[in-house]
Image (cartoon, rainbow, N blue to C red):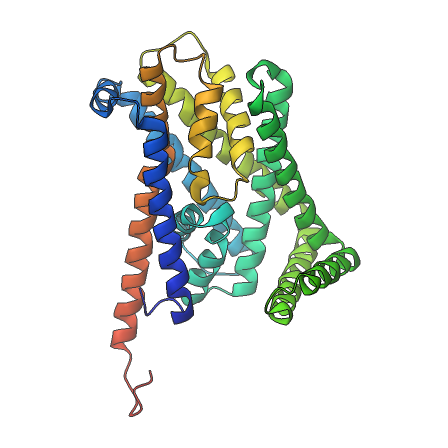
Length: 354
């Protein structure tokens, strides 16, 4: 792994990994300290295995559709990549998104891995920006519509937390769209932000300015491509809507796995859409702790008993987060091993360089 990332980043990733592990430990202590873990695991063991498999399959379809979307965009941009490649990139992104605050490390690392395998960094950025736009639009749309149609699920602190999550998601999408389609306004916003950083005596302001300007250049290049390929952009957004639909269906399969039938797929789907909109923008790795708290708040009246509710939360997070985090870690290690093996084959010069 040390040979596949810049040495200056190793400490950062180790720090993120340790923070992630600490958050897992803290989350389990907070939510399960008053629970009998043996009993919760026994309840999960009694769950219908076919619904558990259906939940895992729904997540797999979620990743496959995301990979198909990026694959088709890269192919349209003239890049020669295979679907297994883009699936591997997607799993790597999921892993790094999970261990970094607000999923900030996922796409940069995905672009890095793509670039290492010959994909143009500029074209990778365009494809992933379009994918990200679709993801933000679908998250906001599903969450807002479902909250309006079923307002009773949001009471007390859940309502205010949902409002915060929705506002942050809308703000992130707005900044993205301004960066894509308003060159003058985005430049003014960057200048204003840099001025604020200077007033706050933040270090490396000039470095941050150059990074922001480089990102804007990528955004403007992406905007030009979107304007020239509107149908491709719309098709991509629609694929993401279906992709996110499969993600939200996991909660229903978990519900049915425990033999419960009082709620149909639509109300469970709506609860899940609101839950995800609430927690997706939380600046914690994997939204650890907050996801569990909101799950208990939204589904409190759905599962009946407290033990069943905690068992459902554990199974739900196991399917749509922990299991595929392990898959993402495996994909990352496999990719790192490929790079190291390839570099070891390269002939060395006298000074040791390759």
